[in-house]
Amino acid sequence: MADDIEQQEIKDELAAADAVRPEKFEYAIRIRGLRNQFGDAIIHDNLDLDVRSGEILGVVGGSGTGKSVLMRSIVGLQTPTAGEIEVYGKTLDTITDAEESRDLRRRWGVMFQGGALFSTLSVAENIQVPLREYYPRLDQRLLDEIAAYKVQMVGLPPDAGPKYPAELSGGMVKRAGLARSLALDPALLFLDEPTAGLDPIGAAKFDELIRELADTMGLTVFLITHDLDSLYATCDRVAVLAEKHVIAVGTIPELLATEHPWIQDYFNGPRGRAAAGCNIATERQDRKS
Image 1 (cartoon, rainbow, N blue to C red):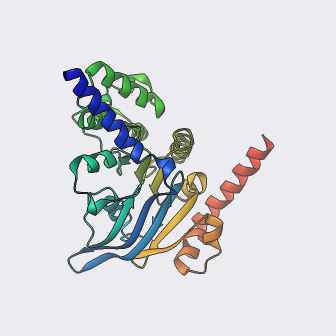
Image 2: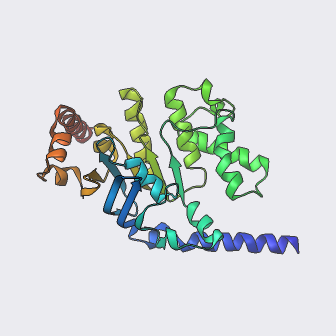
């Protein structure tokens, strides 16, 4: 009897996961009329945005434009003042069933700024946190195997699993945070400034890892970054936040064709030109090889 109940629960979980399979949806995320306000401060007003399934969307904007607030609104950590957010066909603020909400939330993973690891847990234990929350019946042996696989997936050495965050370099902490965000094999991945604080070589390797994982796992990636090199190296499209909403979305060449002064300053400033030149040089080298 207990086995029958457990089998039925597993079937229900699989059916719920099938209902939000990413290949069923043209858009992973659809946002309409979003407004975020803190007291008298309006962060977003009438913000619209579509994120296509399977793309890496870069999100850029000046300081204070609410990039992280937007991400937190999508994942349910910030309640918008107004507007509608739809993820894989489900409108977040209309979901009243706890299990339905839970089934949707385990379809995404989040890597916060700095990795946001629990300092008192080892890398392996950090990776196991979402597994324990969503799959409490998993035994310790399987939890350890999954954690070890995720450690390997993000390019960390096997001996990183038992280590604590304080024992890791900055780049290793980032990779450990990424491993935890991938623990549930999500379809949708949120990354908040993943290369911030990394040296150029470490940042380039992290960009390559994100691109490789997205291609291999079929991920949709919502990538907040200030790193122009990351935009050129990883993103299919870029959304620009300014004036309290998304002022433009497109490929980098499409954005360069717009006349908005902030976009022109951002992409055609000294750093933007340097990143573009590096990207052109890389493409030439790839063609030669």
